[in-house]
Amino acid sequence: DVNITGGSSVTANGGNFEFISGHSLEQTSGSMHHATAAGGFYGISGMIEVETGISTTGVSGAMRLSTGDAFSPVYSGDKFYGANISSGSMVLNTGYALNTNSGNIDMFVGSASYGRAGNMTFSVGRGDVGI
Image (cartoon, rainbow, N blue to C red; front, side, top):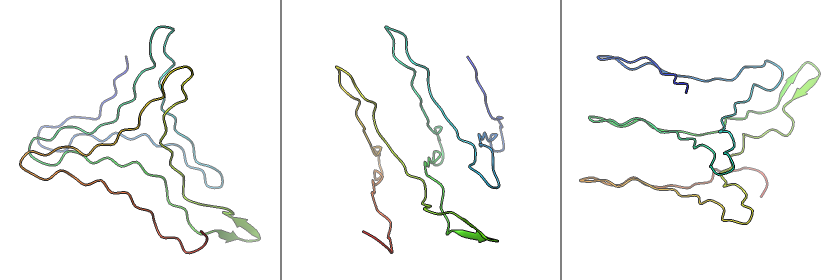
């Protein structure tokens, strides 16, 4: 087993923990891949779990999963950079199943005791050109 932990504190914030891929000035930045290995013949592959910690006197940590922004094409000298650019796409899907059932996609807003449950909002941004 490998356990990597940010620092702890009694009276201040705990230590931060960051994984950041490499930067490139003229090419693609480095990719990040998080995966579990395939399960054995009688087993299952491991689970990937991402969660924030519990808070007893305040708000528990927020979670955000987003793609980066995309900016207008740039001219530099006689070169044109950024043709056919767009912000990154996001896909949420379950795996293919052969002779069995594919997995579910479940989304929940937590319950609240003596308070209001949170909202679930789906929205699409505005576009100026195209369909």
